[in-house]
Every structure is written in C-alpha cells, then in structure tokens.
Image (cartoon, rainbow, N blue to C red; front, side):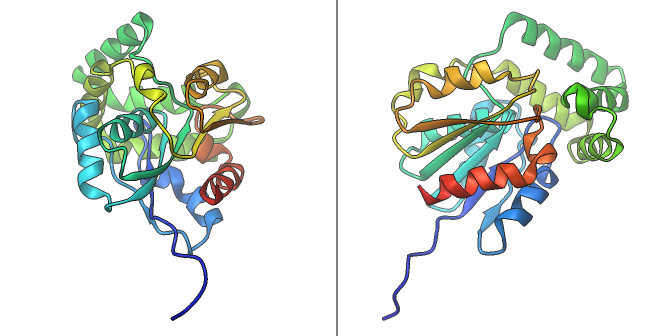
Length: 237
C-alpha cells in the first residue's frame, strides 16, 4: 500500500461567451501538469439548461468546476442540477441573475447584427469591449480575445445569445451550495462589476470573494498567473 494524499478531482474549466478553451491556456500552464483539466465547449446548445446538461454528460463522476462569465452561469446551473457531483465551484466575472432589460436588449441587437452577416464586426467590437480601457491598446490581448470567436462562429454565437435569453434567476439556489466556492472579480470589470460578484458570494456560506487588481472581465486571459494562484488556493481548501 502506498501513502500520500489521494489524487485531486479533475478540474472542468468553462469559457465565457465567444470564448474557447484557449482562454484558459495561461491558467492551465501556471497550475502545472499535475492538474487534470477538461475544457468543454459552451456554444453547442441554445439554453443554459442544455449547456449545463452537456457539461454534466462530458464530465467525470465527480469534479471541481470553474466557469468564466457565461461559463459561470452554466456552472451554477450544473451545480443546481447535480450538486453531489461537483466537489468545489469557482465563479469568475459572472453573476446569478436572469439578465437586466438592458442586457436583453443588447443580446437581441447582437443577434440581429449576426443574422445580417456582421459576425466579424461584432467579434472585433466585443474583443475590445470585454477588456478594460487600460488593456484595449494591447494588440496581443485584443487579438487573442478576437481569435477565440473563430472557434465559436456565427451559429455558435447565436446559440449563446439564445442561451443568455433563457437565463433564470439563480439566487434562490445559492444558499444550498455547500462545497468550497471561489468568487473571483476583476477590479476593472465593466461587464460584470465586482458588486455583482459580492451579491453572488453573499448567500453562499462557503464562498470567498477575491478581486484581481488591474484586471477587467477577461481575467483568465488578462491575469492568468494571478487567476491560477487563486484557483490553487481554492483547490487546496
């Protein structure tokens, strides 16, 4: 018989809207090869329920789950559906709400534009809008953010926008979460401001709310080493 700690549960990482698996590349590299990582897509179904079901179908029996932005919303739904399977939960730059009227109007406008063949322009605009002003002049970050949209494509974005429309208010389910939870904000996030993450963390008795300084909405892309450090502490809890 050999000693030592049992192997950690696999870590499932979910990207946000118009994101793909590469949004986590820097984080995964900083976590190191000992972390068993899976990176499902979140653009193949047109409802939060469908996306969460697909993640649960692809994931192992028990796993740690981290979601960024839209991926965080999908992660919350996955925990609500299968609480016994998720051993810990990390929510980055996300919220538990159903979406405001302004958000819904914005999603509808984006869907109309993509339907008119403006996907490339939409992707380019969102690549900058989801970064804070201090990072919008960084060609490397902007390019990486925009290039991820190519994986999702116009059909995938339309599915994601329909999934956004399907969101329900998940606040009533938050108090039932009993696993270690990390809620991570970007100090400069204009898409999901830190106040939304404080609102998300408050009902969860096991949650810790942390903020990454000088970082906007795309925390895994902008500050991968800092995000990995927070995830490492969370995985050790």
